[in-house]
Image (cartoon, rainbow, N blue to C red; front, side, top):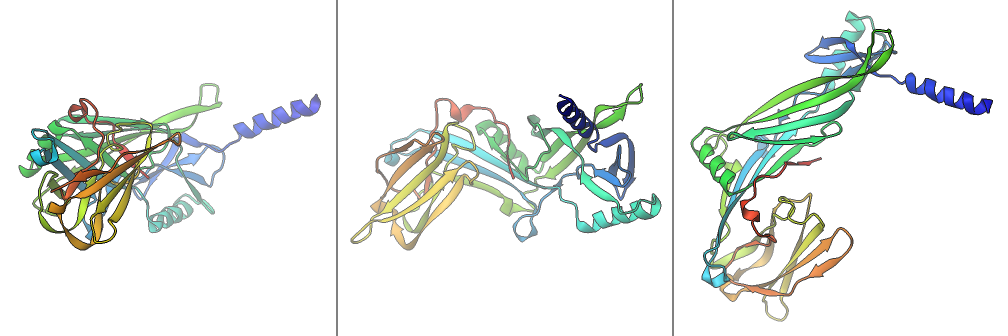
Length: 340
């Protein structure tokens, strides 16, 4: 019994001796706020770095606006069908360089006479984010530090048209706002440590300038017709972006092109973490008037799979294989999806 009581006391002591940031004791060094540990004099906690716009290919800013339009035709059996969809992407960087960390440690040693200073990331109990654009706000939250590096927002027809028109008018400024709740301790009236929190807010403005970066803006007509000389097919899948089926794990698309002897079959797989657009390339140019066959397999989270029949397509160099549900084309934008 005594041993059990000793073990419980030891666990209680260890839990209360766990290092935590002292929220009433901090220094600002090199533009970074550091909170001192409430027990260890040489331990400090770095507040989250302010988000900046990432860099993409060829050192271009990491954002894009993609608009897709579809108009049905008699030849494809959906004459009169029309919809517009958009995808907004913003890449974010929050890493701190090694040189900055060295400067902070050096100042802690010299200015504050701290021997062998140690730095840790500030504990974050919750992150609240908001994307503001075109008088619209989309919010999301998670119970930890926000670790995503990309925000992807599906846009309905209304928001797609508004953003595209605003971009072409040179009037678009998008901002990403984040509020992170930092955890630590403070002394209460009885001079005892108790859990406490502080809020850390940041704003990232993103200017969508189509004149400066025209290659980051796309407007594609999926119903476009290309008769001869094509070497591949662009395939689109918005199921995961718009969360049309929460039980869906992946979609496998097979495309069979008639060739002498045996059809040439190529396949591509879409998942939650994949892009909504991909391309199947063929070694030889084909003639769209000949037509091609498409087969789609759906794999679900519980392990089930459904494979559809082969269907003929003709005159389409762009293929949308999304399973649209009733009214899905008119839904409001969903919460942003973030990628690690």
